[in-house]
Length: 153
Image (cartoon, rainbow, N blue to C red; front, side, top):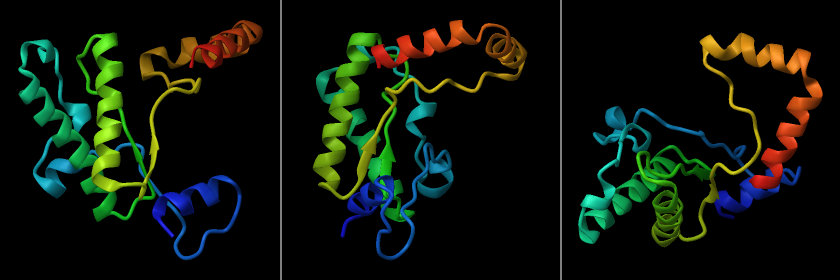
């Protein structure tokens, strides 16, 4: 049974055999563990100035690093963020490309996850009180906003 299959079993409330499926949303210690910069610490504002060959190298490196982390730490899933610094159109296209490369490198071994839900972000400290105030003072407005986030996800 693959880590992906065990992860799906756990999500369905079933008891997978062996160790409990696990994952990390973001494993930032890639420099320490592998001598490589985590994709979230890279910025690709000059993405469109690169040749296609250069973009492919970056895409493969990012995908390979995600798979390397999952294999080393026996994760059941891989959470993939698109590369930072891209415009919205390029980001969506490149994000899908990285997911495809991860599948190419790992087959169906891992459950792939990405942003796309309507979960509220935990605000930074300077915005925490404002956010908490809105939840307390304007609950219907916040629920309506959450509904819109679900519809747009």
